[in-house]
Length: 127
Image (cartoon, rainbow, N blue to C red; front, side, top):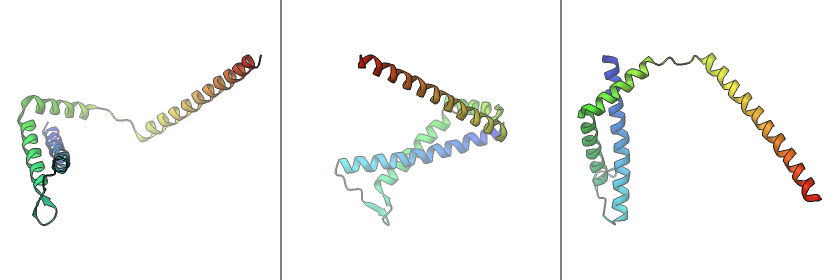
């Protein structure tokens, strides 16, 4: 169970990074739409929108992480994913070949129906 908790905690860090990227871009866009100067704080890369987005992402992630319903849901998902039996590479290759063959057969059948219906329609309209 400790391994599952580790994966869940790592996923919350990943969620925080995605939220930070999203919030930084959205806040920067809002600043641009409102014609508010997004002044640099340090150098040229750290701006007010960057700091605000990071703070919002950290707060949002901590709120999600501390919410027992969300955390238990994530634990249950990780535990169930750990029990999944994943197919081997040979099974995956075989399934891919079956899908490709089925797609080709269905495409040929549809081509045949289309060819016959076009010929039938041309014959009807030619009368």
